[in-house]
Length: 134
Length: 107
Image (cartoon, rainbow over the protein chains, first blue to last red):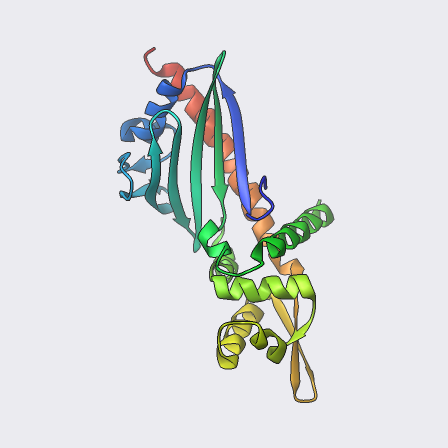
C-alpha cells in the first residue's frame, strides 16, 4: 500500500542482472511461462492475453511498454480488475525490479470528486483492521 | 483468492457504489436523501446501489420514521486485506522463480 489512494501490492527486489536480461524474462512468452504462467503475451500496447494456471485464468491487456524500463498490463481475476506495473531501474550491481499491483484503476478512483481523501480514510480503515486481526 | 471474495470485489469495483461507500466511511451515517442530494444519480439508483452494498455486508441500514439511515461496516473489508497479503505472497514466490530463471538463462 505505497500510495494512499490505491489498494496495492508492491514487491521490490535487487537483482544482480542487467535490465535487458530481466526484460526478456518479463516479455518473452516461453520465458514468462517458466516463472509466471502459460501465456500468449506480446509486448504490444492494447494486446489482450491470458495467463493460465491450474487454478484458472487471468485476463490481461497490455497498457504500456517501454523496453528495459517499464511494462504495465491489466490483470482481471476473481471479479477484481487490477493493474500490474513492472519498473526496471539500473543499479551499479544490476537492477532494482519493482512490481506494483493496484487493486483499482486510477480512472475509476477519479470518477468521484474528493475520492482521494476518501481512499486515505479507506486505507486507514484497512490498516486498523490489519492491526486488529494481527 | 477464494471465490467467496467475488461479491465484495464486484461490489467495490463499481465507481459509483464505491463513491457512496467512501462517503459513508468519511462522513459517517447518512440518510438515502442526504446521499442522493450530492450524488449525480437518482434516489432509486442510490437505493439500488445501497442495496448491493448491504448484500455484500459493506453497509448497514437503520430505519427511523420514514427515513432510512446507512452506515459503513468496515469489518466487511477484511477480505481485501487478505487479498493484498495473498497477492504479496504470490508475487514474492514468482520473484523467486524469476530469479531462478535468470540464473539459468544464457548470459
